[in-house]
Length: 120
Image (cartoon, rainbow, N blue to C red):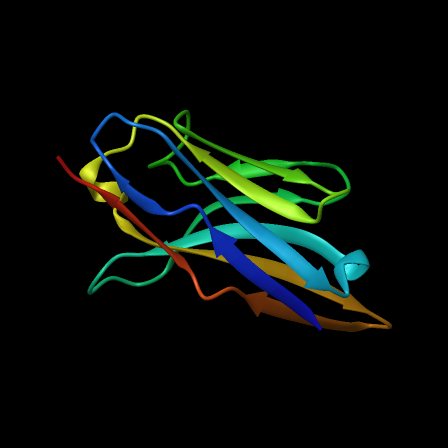
């Protein structure tokens, strides 16, 4: 099993910056991809950014491209999302997600989320 715990959310003014983190534990050696999703009230959960664990290949939603940066510290088993130029529409609960598996079995784990609110 892989467990994920997010941290670092909070209230920030428009144009500000915030970094959220996701600490992974358990079978971390089997993780091959990690992602950040977000869900605003009344909306579906959407993919924000993703990163492959071995090659570090990243991808971003168009709405955050150029403003957000996903990174990982494999030694610390921690995923980060640096968010710059925040907008009110970035307000959401941000969830960490990990794709992992071994012996032909593949799974996904989710954290409980951290609230990010962008408001003046």
